[in-house]
Image (tube, rainbow, N blue to C red; front, side):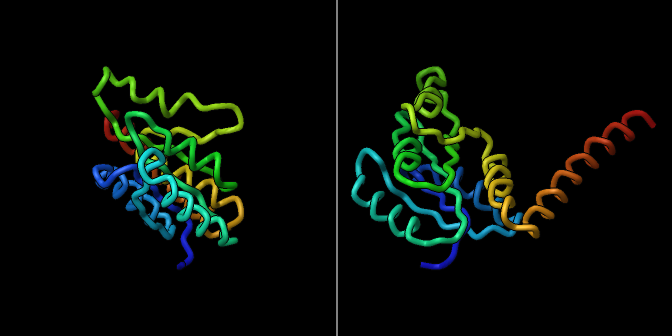
Length: 160
């Protein structure tokens, strides 16, 4: 298995567009990304096998889980692995948007971070991984500076 920094696990292939946004943003930080489809409800054995493969690699990693409706995936992954997990559920208007509660409410001892915007999930992954990677930390700082410059430029443009 090749070295990766971010492992994206989708509950179904219908989450691919959402996953691709996370992947693109993570790759902008120079992160290596792998993507998989595995359902905590329907393919638990496959999911466990996948997680064990990654957990046996000592490289720093962050998992990003993408599941809506009844998001068992994020809690399952977080409960199984030692690395950080970021739940990034796709937006849904089904059930009046109440799907989000299945990502927010976790049992004790299970603590995936929940980030709704795909780009922000990649940013959080980069920040976590930058704790032990100076060059990645520099890229995160550059990103933040570009954000600041964008706001200051907009303010200047508005007031000139």
